[in-house]
Image (tube, rainbow, N blue to C red; front, side):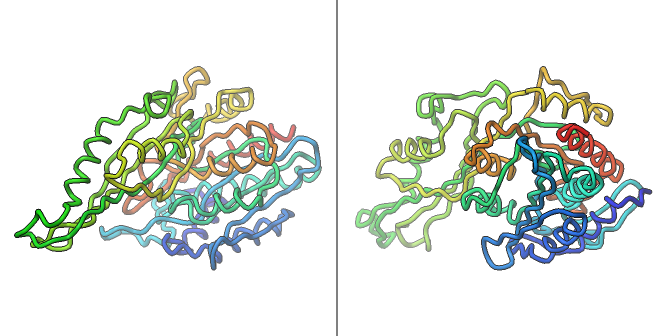
Length: 385
C-alpha cells in the first residue's frame, strides 16, 4: 500500500465534512491554504457566502507567459439513503483503495494537484508558474467558480486542468447544463364544477407536448457537435395540485437540458418561452456553459503525459468529452474575459468517474500516485523545466 504524501493529504481532506448543502468548506479550504502558503504560494480566500470558501494559490507568474491553472472543488454530495460499510469521513484504506465521500469526486484530484505543485514549488518562483483554484459549491450550480469569474477575482491563466474523476484519461470538454422550471397557472374550483376553473395540468400537458418534439436546429441553429454529439432535453419532474377534489391552479415542471457549443442559453430560454407562449412561464434555475477545446500543441502534450498510465491510449485524432459538467467552464469564461486568450482546458484526474456519488465511494491509490506524476510533467513542460 502506498504511504505517499498524496494519499495522506487525500485522507486529511476526507476528514472534513463538506457535504453540500450546506458545504461549509472554510476549514478544509484553510487546511489547503496553509499547506500551500508554507510551500511559498501566495494564497487568498474568497467567500460567496458565510463559510463558503474558495482558495486561490499562485507561485511564479513573473513572466509574460501566464501560469497554468489546476482546479478542483472542495464540496461533496450527500451520503444518500443506503448504509455505508466504510466510514465516509475516515479515509480508510484497503489494498489499492482509499474510501470516503469525495475520495473519487474529487478530493483525490485536489490532493494530487496540490502535492505536484508543492513538489515543484522551489523551481517555479521565476517561471510562468502554477495557480491552484480550489472552489466551494461546485456540486450545487458551480457557485464558487461563478463567483470568482463574475467578480473578477481570477487573474491570469494560459491553460486549465480540471482534476475531476477521469481515471487519468484526458477529456477535452463537456456539454453545457441548464435547468429550468416552467409553471402553468390556472384557476381553482370545486372538482364537481370543473367548468368554473381552469385546469393547470391540462395547460402543462400542452407544454409537455411542445417540448417532446423540440427542434434544436430550428430554434437554436444547431443540433449536433462533431465531438459531443447531440444536445438533450429531459422533462424531469412535475408537481401540481393540492387535493383531489379541487381543480389544480398551479403545476410546476423542471427540465434538464445538456447543450453543445453554438447553443446560446439566453436564446434557448427565449425560444422555449416563445414556443409555449401563455401556457407557462419559464424560470432559469442554474446553468453551466459547454466546455470544449480544439486539440492543439498543449493538449497533445497532455495526451502524451497520460499515455504511459492509460488503460486506453488517448488519441489526439479522436478526442473525447466527458458526460458531467465542471467548474472549468466558468473558470475558463472568467479567464477569457480577463484577456487570457483561448485558455485550452482539459478534464483529467485520478478518480473513477463511475464511482462518483456512489455509496462506499473509493479511489485507486495507484491512480492517485500516477496522477501526481502526470500533473508534475504537465507543470514542468508548461514552465520549461
